[in-house]
Structures are given as structure tokens and as C-alpha cells.
Image 1 (tube, helix red, strand yellow):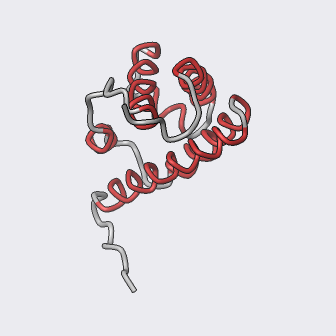
Image 2 (cartoon, rainbow, N blue to C red):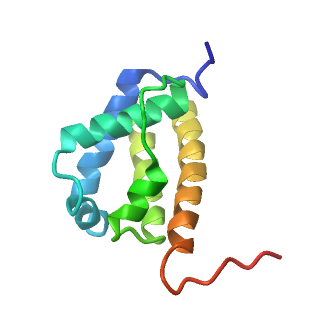
Amino acid sequence: MVPPRFAITPPEIDRVVATFYTAVRRHEVLGPVFAAHVHDWPEHEAKIAAFWRNAILYERSYDGSPMRAHLRAGNVRAEHFLEWLMLFDETLRRCLPEDSARGWSALAHRIGAGLRMGVENTTPGAMPPVLR
């Protein structure tokens, strides 16, 4: 058995996900983006909690492709990830002990950077990144 990336329990993951998506639904930028695609919030939250349990606890309870989901949505923009991460960090700080919040935030920022770059690089008219 692989140890978790940091100390956290499945109920804590569920609480963070539920708290976060409550905030997302009220968010002026992210709310409409999600509302266009999420019609069953409990189902969505269960899927995302499974994603995080897989990423953090190595449960293998998630089978999906976050990149594909974000690209298929059609209304997800690279700049949305900054908003998402700020809101997620705020949720982590409110819901978890400092060490767990810090560990999860670091992981979320790594994943978010990859998703942001994927969305950015497939946007029509987007320029390739400058590598120096």
C-alpha cells in the first residue's frame, strides 16, 4: 500500500469538495462556467472527490480524463484556473489543518498548471509558449 501524499482522510476530502463547490456555484466567474455543464451537483462532487482520493490517497476510485473534460466543455478558458485555484486555496485554508491544506494546495497548483496549459495550447489562435 502506498502512503498518502499528506495526512488527510476521505471525509475531509469530501468536506473540502462540497465546501468548494458551494462556493463555485456562487462565484461570479466560475459559477456560470460550471452551471453550463453540471446538472447533478452531488454526482459531480462524488466524481471529483474520487479524483482527489485517487490523487492523494491512491485509492484508484476515479476513472476519467480531467484534460478531456475541460477541453470538451468548450467554455473553460486558461484564465479560469487562476480563479479556481484562489477559491480552492481559500477553501483548503478554511477546512483543513495547515499542513494538509499546504500539501493539497501544492498538488492542486501542479495539476491546475497542466490543465491551464492544455486549455491554453488548444485555444484557437493561441500562440505556442516561448521557451527560453
